Length: 173
Image (cartoon, rainbow, N blue to C red; front, side, top):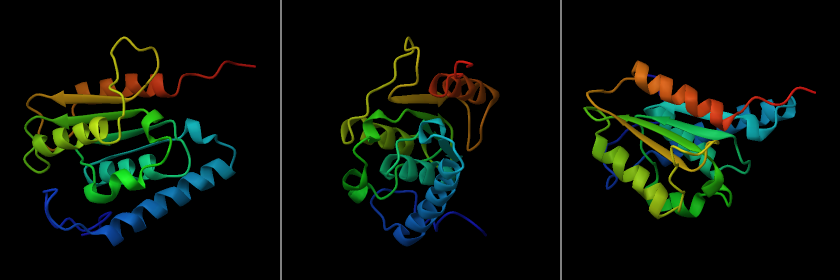
């Protein structure tokens, strides 16, 4: 079946399809470059995805040369854990990240999402987003009770509010 990369296991201690991960990241980076070349500032670009798409979004958004407007990860995990920290860009800590994960996800277990989010805050030192913040800053980690490997209306409402913070309306000229 078509996918972003081959999943060998849902465990950080197993081998990963590094070649497939990096190839998919390259393809997304090419799309971002095309948008920037067309006149959209990189800080107005948000990459996001679900499951494997979340993995590629994290890898692209936090290791890429451009500081993006944000990264959205729904039901994903941090890939290439042993290399991710050394691959992270200098601006990774300042890229806002929205992470949503179902507490009952049987495919990407909540423990993997939790460990991944903790990796971002401890190893990459991403700040934790505060609810009182007017803009999207740091990691916004959101767990949805009863949600399996899917998205919910509540998660999508939270994501919409986050996008409005990450990409506020530009003042009219």
